[in-house]
Image (cartoon, rainbow, N blue to C red):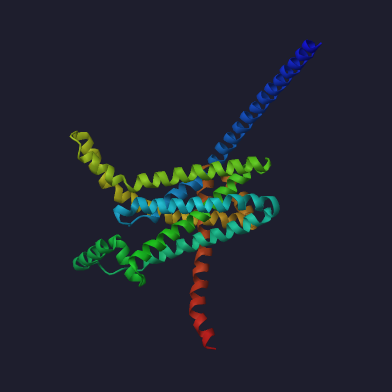
Length: 337
């Protein structure tokens, strides 16, 4: 009797273990399927943000232009850490806004777009202000000051024009890059969120986190590679191979042109991205683009849309600059009264 009871107990335990194994297998299959869904949605979200990623790359590479060579990687790392902090704020914020106040996403993106266009107009105005020729003696003085303070000569000149400390100027430059990254990251998070809006909250969070980490590694890894191209060129020139030396000379000669090009592209991207955010929030303009320009198709439609975005961005950016200038000019007078 005791033996029969023991056999029944063992049989129950075996059945229970079978049930556990079956449930574990089912849970594992569901987990694998969910992981596959997250990976697929992440891939789709990354694809939809490709255009913004290109602008993000250009803008961030442009931000480190003119920084002392020995500080390029530390500056890139500082901006990358700031970018990760931005995304640590943006991911939960995007989920909360999507869940409770989804109507707020567009106005916030429009504010960010206006800020990008404002910065773009300021950059153009700086270029339009002709600077006096930089004398050789001044260049030597700037180089000496840069060596003592651990900054780039261009930072010394720019800091003098703004009447600030060169080290503080570079610090502010990093902060500016982080602010710009915040706006671009916000747009990327909004686009990514749009691809998973109908999914459960945990899948939305998983996709946003995956996209945030992937774009940070991708963008700042490429920025770091771009700013160190001259070092790679120097390493190749030290090789014994004539082909390697020629490639090294080519890289060193190409790097300044690439950085200048990225500076131009980065400024243009401010209007393109900022303008697109503004147009998206202006229903009449967006409807006009959809009704008149988009049906043209092909390259014409693409260029037409870009031109509209740039034009709207330039007008809004100039208006913001004008308003701020008036505020600064009229503010002291109000204080006197």
